[in-house]
Length: 477
Image (tube, rainbow, N blue to C red):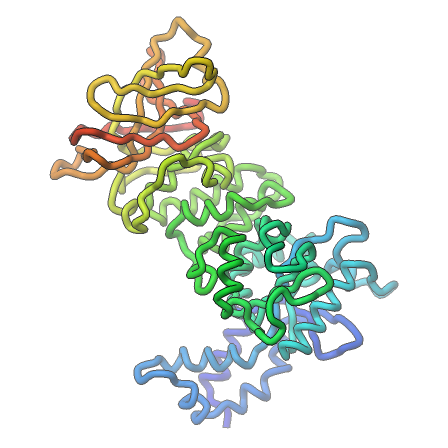
């Protein structure tokens, strides 16, 4: 007799945990798209045969929850593959959803050959009954498909039996770091989510030992993948999505590109477990929307340690993940993952077009480096401290207005706290990151000045100072 909890868990799993549309691999002769009802029919007999003995046999430790054991059993039965690849740029390109609906002609070309080879591998090498490929399983003209897929991508890849990665421009492991696949924004969640991955290169030749069915279980291969991607081995092996280590994750994304600007943000939704509307046409605002979702949940102030041009909608965040690339730092941030949760303003106010947070303000004079047009040395007015040289990527608006009384300052973001609730502490021998700020006689608020690198302050003496509320809005820039 079927176990009721197993049947219920199977129904929930089919509805919520796997792609809504899959390729049925039952037929070798054709590629047929099906929805979850077909998946249910394919596995219901096997699911109904699960017994209490099976549940007991899959229980790994004494206090393991029964529902967790049942979910493991269900997941082991429902086997599907996912494909991680980069889209073809040559005509006729990829086979897409609408092509498979056509009854007039069978698709052909490199895109079709890729799809067929992928399906053959999923069926023959990994024993999968179903497979998912973004090219054909999504209706790219359907906004609902796009929204659901973007929000669910990580979960679908995590639940898959295997993720087959196809790096068309690689023939050896050493080629991975130059392959367009490793620089694609969309392959970031696809490299982090799967627990089992197998990598293939040009001509569908395995890039690792053919006898290893999970390249993530091979320490040597994983080390090569980490070097090529800039992602630590521990994250490649076991990654949990969420709004933590935001700056670190954005630095991974800073090395990647997408075909359209909005996808720089949408491809990151899954790794941050973020929910924002998909709206192609909003341009750079998509990244601002992502940050608006992630930053308040993060509580980590180092997300403001970026450089380069700011967002058009909010001067407190960068235009894109490129603001977090390694080249933006000429000094090291604190390596302690908890440090930036424990310092700075934990009661900041962040919205789509403004940031309000308290900083330690230290007024400076910008001294231009001889023969270097855009490079300056900020010199503090009142105490001993050194600040790294700053290069301004574009002449600031105030630099040509010689009649204005311009004041310059750095606003220290990751200061420590004292016993006084509105006072910050800067310790000697510690480096802090800052905003470079300016204020004219005609304005009340400080403005943020874009710099090519993150500004750091190294203090020679302890400083305890009243905090100043910094209000950065689009209207001030």
